[in-house]
Length: 450
Picture: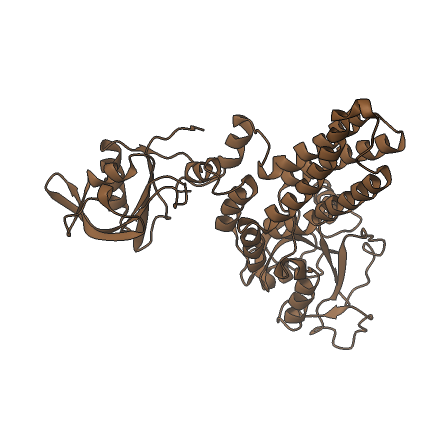
């Protein structure tokens, strides 16, 4: 990752569209763009005010490459905090390639992945968690994931962490004030009040860490294991949920030998469906391996769909157990073949083959994921980096709590609180010096134009 003020350029839109946007940023961005652009008004971009749109042509010598619009943004009122220009041209890959070639010949260099956003971070336009949310917003494939990223990018998450940080700074400032008056033997921080404040901060951090289960599931897709005995209709159900023939369906028991994973958006939430091998007693080594993978899929699933064929006696699934943090949906399949079968209380009756009852199953899946916190603006953690930082902050907070109970000296208590601030600050980058290695890892996941 390069951290400098060179003029950088890149396409900010995906290829294949009717219109493309090419972005410049840097101290010489406008001058560089002027070398290849001629406005019909005759005005140069370098003399233009910010937030102005100019119509003209991209020229390669006397050859017209394209008729374009150029938007001008002046520092510090731009995405990167630098002078910037955005060329809106026709989306032809040839035209985009020619403009990029001319831009580099005019003095710009190709931006690295995430370099525009890292410049925004360095300029204080975004904090680190907001910068990560930019990538999440681009990658979002459901309403819930979009809402999660939007809330984080708009600063709701950062505001929560800033409030926590202010409380912690209040604690350590009182403790360090005592150090300044150590010879007076006074206590500015009432130890009982200090303990109550630490307990309150601990509750807030625990609440944030608990939200990670939801946030990670929404970001990556809620894992759903479809399990049952062989020939219960698991693969047929998967194909029905996906509206395509993804899994091979056969009347021969044990056709599915491995876990098949596919995604579907249901009610604004992305689900990752795991079609698993049927569970039964078998001496077939390959089938046994498939069953072992089925059990692993059940372990990592947030929702387990238990498929039952009422036309045959169920044997292998009777002992199925799930954790408290998992949801079990019992589904009685093939009701078109066994219309007189008994439906247990709480079970869903469907025909995966005809589609009867599948919409009710989709509703049950959607209802199993409580996203109300997202749409009410609550803070939800979705990055494992944040989750780990909060865990380290919690450990430091526990040390501070023990220090209070053991009446440790003020300087040691203050050091523990400072460690909590250090880990909370690592999430947003505020008050935290992050290494180039960490920043490089975060921003390497971005696309070139961001």
